[in-house]
Length: 315
Image (cartoon, rainbow, N blue to C red; front, top):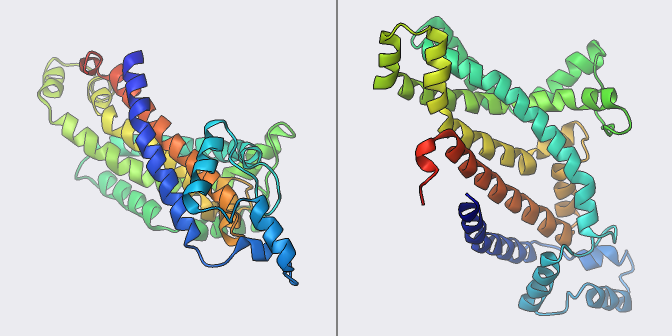
């Protein structure tokens, strides 16, 4: 297992290099100049030249990339052009918020999507199956920002059960922290639940048609034991893949939801960085998200081998 993990980590290095090159090159093509914005309205040429020298913006692009990549290997992702704070420090301050939101949203998706998918597969062709599919498609189709605004109007404005926006750290108040994250987690989780439900239903339908499931039923085993022990366990492979991908999507893609609920996470930070042309922050966030996807894919492969004994001795 250790050899497999090391081999996968080594194979991910070219991917991370290509991602960093792609992001570094494309952001240089964005219109506008961050130095001119930092220099103020007067834009004194001396100040502009000083800022370009300070942030090595006068160097050729390959030299800039190599300098940034060398620092990234040691954990130094540069300085923010707007706040003049280390990018690694900014990421460490925002990452726990996004991870907490992503975990809660994924829990909502798992609690809704997997049971609904199993029931839909067992009751295929019935009204329950059609109803579950309608709910799943609705969750996929409804925009997050619209659902977020509707939930704010109902639970924050009218009922006044939950706060409309903002964020309270867990260390400051666990109860307030949960209250501020319930609505955005539900908004994100319902959309993912629809996707997870469809994949769970498809995987379960394929497994339920297998010979060993028919044999288990012919032996007179309890129906729930057949579904959970024999069918669901063998349907976990695509579900694990989809779950890891959805979690990676949450880490880097909860932009609109974080904007609507004013959650100070990765999504809001990268939007602000793009608008402010804060290149160092954009590079750092995208690199962290790419590393997150690589680790999540590795986690999925490890779980495959734990779930399916036939893969444990595979190359």
